Length: 95
Image (tube, rainbow, N blue to C red; front, side, top):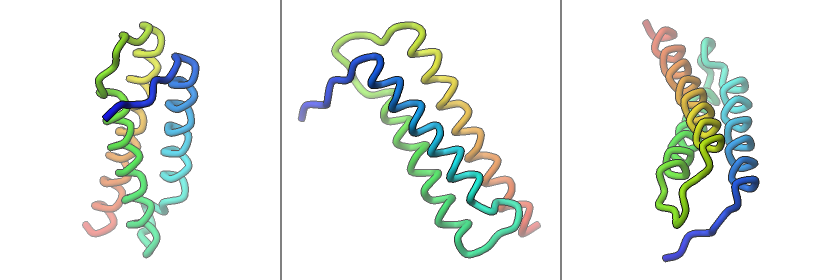
């Protein structure tokens, strides 16, 4: 199975798009006021975070530039943090 080879610029746009998607999903999730759609948004946010982890740690032919590694790690860390905040918000609703 071959993976698509992306340039640094294309990969940067992927990181920015999925990071923005994670933020939009979190903002629409009603985390601190749990409704039926909250769980759907949480599942979507989980899939975005898992995809980003897979995207970050996939095997590549050539190493990424240092600036792209830093940006990717920051976006991955921020989106993972949003997911943790989502989980804490849902858990505090039931506490």
